[in-house]
Image (cartoon, rainbow, N blue to C red; front, side):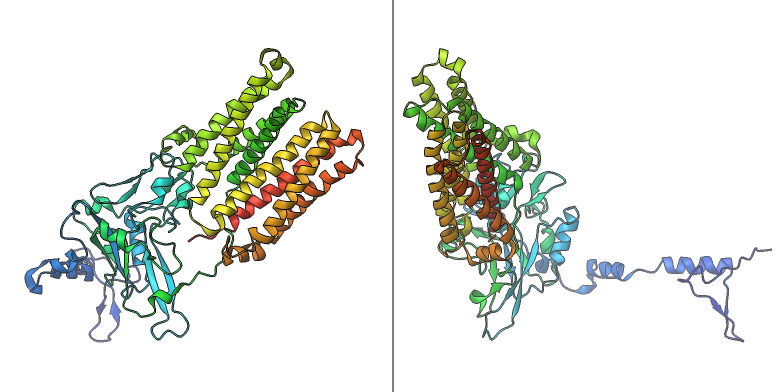
Length: 552
């Protein structure tokens, strides 16, 4: 007798049950009926499978290959040509399917994205639609700023396709490229300690397959084209990729954005008024302030050696050496992979960061030699002339390092880091902090000379503070309106600390030394506190330098 097994329909909701012809009530299936029904459903195709079968079969009556192939060039780039993204802004709906596909097909980590979708708003009085979406990724520039800035040559531009690739295994995570790129393309991955970016899915293009973003766009708003490099050079001479972006002549981006709307040039980014502070880069704040203070102290000491005063040389060079060591050591904390710091000089031919590292690498041993020659036991073996020569060499190397530090940020062409603003701030830190450290060194031996240095320190500190108050954050010629609003809205506390420490430690306390009101026993701690306040003020000023800068 055939075995019968009752199947509870609550356990098999996808299978129908028998209906009693007499009462109309549902009855449980037998085992044989259940198996037959399951085999029947297994043989049915899903909607996706039915579409795939129809798509691949001859029943459609036309060839879809041209429709798909139109999103890719029909030939590889020739000499003087390269691949480029072509975006139809009118077709982009802002659905972010391209972002999702890029993330999924490239195996990106959570929160990581190589492609972004922005929004443009029409100007007041425009007659067409008020909103337009912009999908962007790497523009694979003819003159990529990321490659020029990288100190380890972690970027390469393919000589055939023109694609700018990032070499993950070469990167040591300095993040300079994230500052240099005006389009915010390279993204730092804290977990891996490196930067990553879009490479136009070069492995797919190599086999004739469209990149992830091109494949996924439901409106075919993104396609890959072949562009003539000479035409790109001409097109980018005075143009911008989008309203508010940096002039394209900086990096020569190859991407093109097409639209038929009349008000395209007058549109603005939806986040154009965003004045939130940027990442501060605390390790760089410390490094810049301390290395510049060190160079300033060494320069003041060398000047005193020129006039024949060796009294503070040893102690002043010691303070300069301590600041330099702390500053350079803190800079390694900014690296994602500090174990590969030895690669930093690879890009010395084109990277200001490599040149800065080379200059300070020469500065440290020269400063150590100057300190050794200026000590009591060193003076026995080294004459004054040799000590002066080594000291001047150390100052020259340190000044070159400060010069390169300024060029690192000027290279980015951000208005708040413009040439004049950066030069005054960096050189001013050298002078003000250097004099403060020299006063500390001199207070150990000769109070009257410390008074002379105090007058100089108060004068230069006052001039720098007045300049910052009147020009550093207040003039449209040196900073953008957004940067000024960032300081006024979000950095008022930091700004107050900067001026409070600068006025008290850089102006008031040195002037009190001049008056002679400080007892001899309290002079040393007084000068130490003053120098500490000056350094705190310079650290606060350098914090504003990073936080208030606006990305392009």
